[in-house]
Length: 111
Image 1 (tube, rainbow, N blue to C red):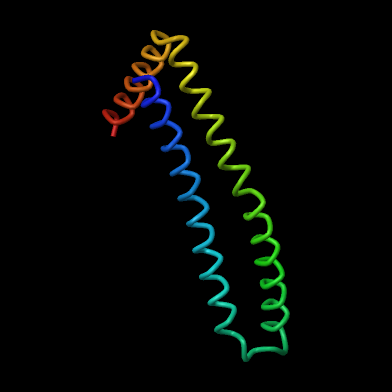
Image 2 (image 1 turned 135 degrees about the vertical axis):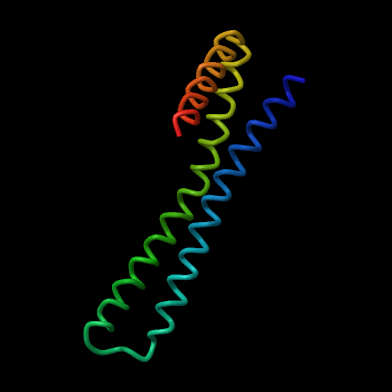
């Protein structure tokens, strides 16, 4: 049962990081498509903005590919840390969850 909770937390963290990376890659693809649509505009202000945008996208792609592995590792560590905390301090975890639930309830009630 403990292993299942840990696996669920890890899978949830990984799914969130994968979703974020996927959304960023989709944004990059959309930006590239927009830049390709202005392919005929080589001279003037549009041409310089276009070349700068292409350079920025290339740099962002390199950064995201480097961060992808790091983000996945950090998500695993965070999920493992949360799982360890809950197993060491179950009543504190219940208290924190109850407190957060109370705060969310108060905020919802005010609306």
